Image (cartoon, rainbow, N blue to C red):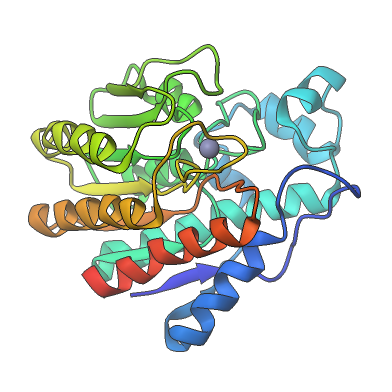
Length: 295
Ligand SMILES: [Zn+2]
């Protein structure tokens, strides 16, 4: 098992920005205390790797800082060199986790899961779609055929869904708040919209009903976007899961990977709790459970 992280290329945001950039070091610092031997630095992704999933014009604007005002507004971050480097590092961590998982079975990346990034644009705090890039790398360089993405962030994985909508070899599952951002949803292979204030029991029943479709796809590789913004009290979520409910959710995904005997790559995702420490704990639990289940 390896858990990839980065303390280089931290995102520098203007004072007062709503994005909780401070949560990232607190997640890996927590895991570093418990599992110091499992942590490894994430490299930056190369532009030519990122270009496997993204439009060259978008990448050129991103690299040069020539994104339009509208594009920057949709993204939610002001352009900066630190944003570009951080975004490449964030893809690089998922690629490193992919390479580890393909050899050893499972790995986590304590960043990434930026599923609102489309081929030609960033949206909703997501600059580059790390899972989409990793899917292309897995196919091109590692000859992986069928792939599934289990996206349990409270927001629909719209970017990922749109990038693989026409590709029957990639199965995208998204459980999300029906009334949450993005307000115009894309079509995943399987979408499970959930009501506001959905509780643990209802959520886990919905997940149990959905996971057989992932198994039926017969994936050779699994990605798990493990956002924790379904936690009750999240500023940007509308569901009401508990920490225990989230851990049961994680355990189900890990059990599926184990049953299917396929490599598993786990990424971060959203977590915007009013008390950010609650998001940090929930994110850390994702990797604790991973080590326990598949380490
Ligand atoms: Zn989210």
